[in-house]
Image 1: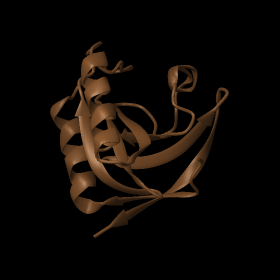
Image 2: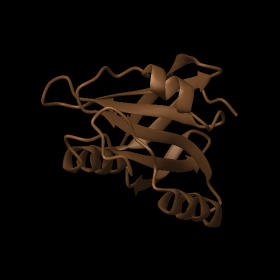
Image 3: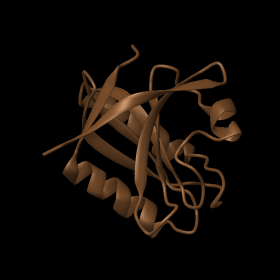
Image 4: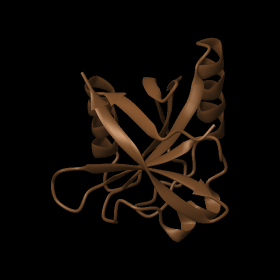
Length: 136
């Protein structure tokens, strides 16, 4: 189900920013779960390629994360990853490798010392922007 908006609590955003920061200079990645566009679970996942320009989730950690979302009876709302030196929009690699059409792609990009964040739907090699809200 494509959502028009995703809402992420400040505490989860802080956890995501911390996760991408401690993985510099490489990309970091993870899962976000919740209901009706409201994120309430953040699951960092190890990037097995340890690269500043791509990520591949550790399959065991990814499976454990998906199982946890299922146990908590929440949906996979988004896959997130960072672009430590790139733009906040999906790269060609992102467009080709996004395997979850029912989950958003969230990118944290660092062009300055601050991280920007943007959400997208990726479908058949194209993307569109999703509204992203921060909640208390």
